[in-house]
Image (cartoon, rainbow, N blue to C red; front, side):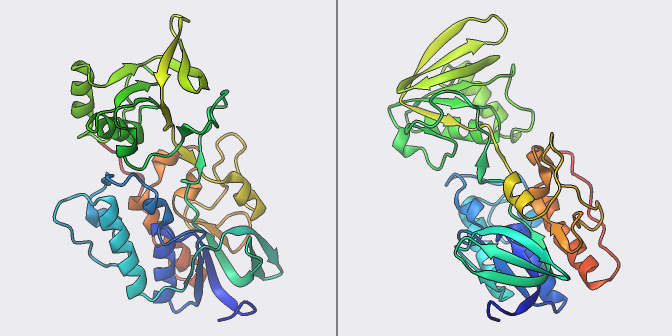
Length: 337
């Protein structure tokens, strides 16, 4: 189909949930187009190279295609291979490296405008853009310096250097353990009194033992107030004591949030405080008829509430609603260990 054709549904985002929506559209005989601003499952490609998923492989499968791995939990490379193969199996219509700027509704159809200058048209639109593109900025001086990053990929560039990690969630703990094991001097700084309760359960004994041994250093109840080349400045939130840490590199691993401005440009109404879209809890349709949210993009600031494991099911409910059949009921959030 060319740019003047009208698709039954356009899906913005080529992550697992966006692919799941394309699969459900294909199964229901709907013409579709997936617009992805990067590569297939771009967010997973940008994950740390040694990352392993929290969910078991069967819980991140899509399209009814088994995800065979030698262990129980897939790693980044296995997931990239799996989702690419599933997209190929279903012959999904994907246009890559095509960022969407906004969505406009005109009568009964939508125009999806891209930053490349192309415009596509559809009867329905599903936003499945995830949340990995917008880091939670601390808003402190020096946060934009060259040696500071909000993303971590692999440990070897940090060997034999002083690394300060801000945050104490999964990404921070995984990075700290990898860095320690590649001879970096690691200090974790976190506002709370301990690691976050959502950290993968198998990582907690490992990191706490390394802290006890003095191989990973921690400063809890502490915030970073500014960053300079070679140094970060801290304040203890209980005592008010100020200090400084040597820092050749600073990893700000405090999480990510959906692109609220993109959602607003698409016509989605958001809660001002939580950034959670206003949508129907059963059909995932927003206040704009025919415009849906799917997957982690609907989480707002609560990104720990939606993940592939339950986000993949949104696709079936959305397509059910689009074609007018009984809507699949999405399971509630799973309580994690």
